[in-house]
Image 1 (tube, helix red, strand yellow):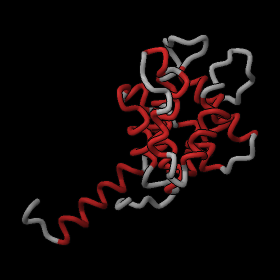
Image 2: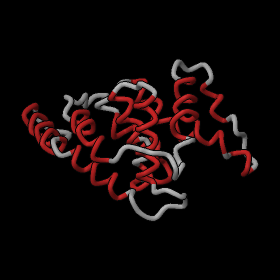
Image 3: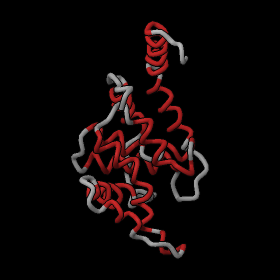
Length: 176
């Protein structure tokens, strides 16, 4: 495309918009794929449902609730960089704050286990001066870390589907 014309790029963006129109359904399918084998007492999907339920119960806005639901979506698609995968998927549709939290939650979550591997559990502190640092700490402490509880009553995926569809129906910023 080094010799692409304006119209070539218009066609490319139109095709991207057509593909984007099915994004919510693909995301729902990926979430459903997380409802299987798990090293925890609950499935990966149930963990995400718990996280989103906790966020909503704490009064988070709908965008943040969907980000809580999708924060670990990368576990099935990019397990070694799951946070960055989920953040990249969400970036054209969400605020800079929610993007940053999802992108960094994996590192911030490692606060709870790095010391078991002889690593510095405070690795997240390299972002201590970032404006969303405390928001990410709170995301992990209040919603993510505690959401592996088989006795917790979470809302089902069907409850969140309209929220997912609404988020991905937003006009994306392809330059985000």
